[in-house]
Length: 160
Length: 329
Image 1 (cartoon, rainbow over the protein chains, first blue to last red):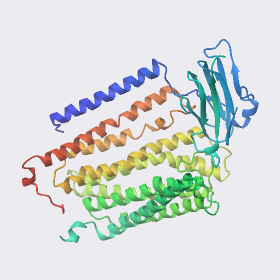
Image 2 (cartoon, chains in turn orange, brown):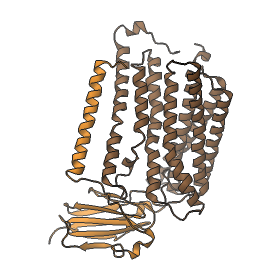
Image 3 (cartoon, rainbow over the protein chains, first blue to last red):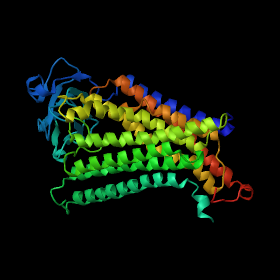
């Protein structure tokens, strides 16, 4: 196949740009550790209420870990437990969440927390929350007729 | 201008193609109307009558536009371009296409009925464990199986052309339609196995539960390639029809074919990028499929280059004199 000179330049430029983009993403993912929630942990979704830590949803202070708080969330149509969590601003928090019924979303608007909650799987994400204020948690995956009413709140409060 | 010379699609084949178009545009009308209703409901000043739910309307909107309009339009369009460029279909091939068309129409009616009865308000992604009535799943199966028949007819016509014209380059549009049909076969294997092996037996009560991650992975194995399946008919028009309309010349026939082959290959291993925030897939595999997803840049840039080159060579001084615009190719 004959390729025109301009066409070769164009293909080289395009492929070069592609390589640059992918290297940037690779460095971000494996050097900086910016990875999406991918815990690959499973759970019997019919027994969520009896299995720790989901038998006691809520915020817990922990010691001796890389994070100071664990926020355990159980989602079910159409609400989250707990409905509200108050966290000290600047804390490192691990969110551990699952669902008892259908697929739900767990997106904290204004932060980079965004996870799918799937029955049978545990979603985990570790992040530092640096801004004070109220952050709406909402379900971003259709889960039934009450989907749009499914929400909770994370309050980030100052140290006083 | 003689109408007959424009409509050089065999009239029996034209009926098959137009039948697809009627259903496609009916789906567009229904799906579009549902989109309008959603805006009215969201405005807060309008309430749907007869207890119809917002998500029910949303499901009709998604299924009609995402699955029905696209499949019918593309299959009808490709059937017409194959007939136009490779020659009329044989009676057997045409019969397969008609059976496929009616199977798709029956399936659409079954799925639509269940959505209207509020037995399948699961959106067009139908993620388990939201469960729809088994008739909804069976209807979708018929749509897919019907589309396979229409696709098989196109492949059979291509094979027939190859046998009759040994050693010659196949008509570009026929080649492209066949590549897109093959992509459709490969992609729909995912959704067909999801529906036939998991959702349908589960909705009939034959199996107690399904693995949510597997159903979603099979869905997106199909769902991403689905987007390329929608895209390639537009590329067919760009590569092969636009040059004729503007009186230009395709930049490179082999480049166009290569880009279609690349689209086919790169459509396969990329579904995970629709599942990046899911818990059950490890970060390494997500990254790998993101890398593979980016490969689509290569045939996309090839196409962009071809389009600009084709317009440029047409617009150069002198090109107008050499190739006057001929609306009838």
